[in-house]
Image 1 (cartoon, helix red, strand yellow):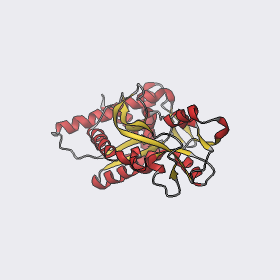
Image 2 (cartoon, rainbow, N blue to C red):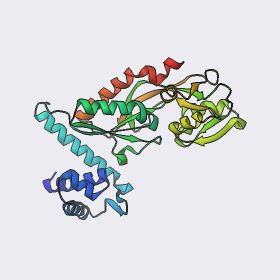
Image 3 (cartoon, rainbow, N blue to C red):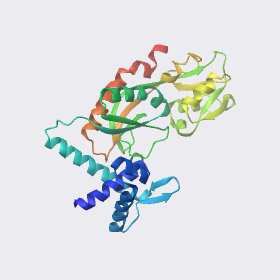
Image 4 (cartoon, rainbow, N blue to C red):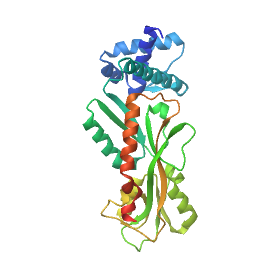
Length: 288
């Protein structure tokens, strides 16, 4: 790749990752005019815009997502060549982005990220919290932690443990159930509810387990929750007879098109080991 072409592409990639010319300039240690010049040069050379300029910043155009993915892979490959050329002795550094559900980010993944940052000062983790299945290319996520019966075709990974679900409320007499909405409606817990709970027993709907936990804690209903957030809330009790203890595999995966760097492999390995070590609390074995 011609040096000038790669230099322009590096600026385009940084704007895509930060969503802002000013933030890209700060990361690259240049002024914003330099960033604008390189982005314009890249777009002019290829005869097409990469970004939509909005009041909120620079938004990557949907049909240019593949350009950013290719740039990320090129950057990762260059880093890996440098590492191998130096005998593989480079220290781990940079940022690894992990996406998962709000429940897992708020519990085990926040612990993992803090521990990793404390152990490797030059290695940082960015947590992307969403119950929806993010577009990993557009979000520039490197690793996904996903509870699912199976992975989609665009992901490859390993099931490292299982995530348990149970029913929670403030007392055993509860009979009304809060509904799992949005992305949660496709979960194993929602399927069980659809097969076993009558419509006349259903109440308010919500698309977040963290919010469903708060609703259950206020009383007046039962929430099906991941055991890792239900078991450790002193306001709630697990309603043993309300439903069976459900489990689903918990995967650590990445997009099939991602070129894995040394950093990504190291973080993915540590993350898998960490989650496997948390199997009891993730499964909810202590409260069964």
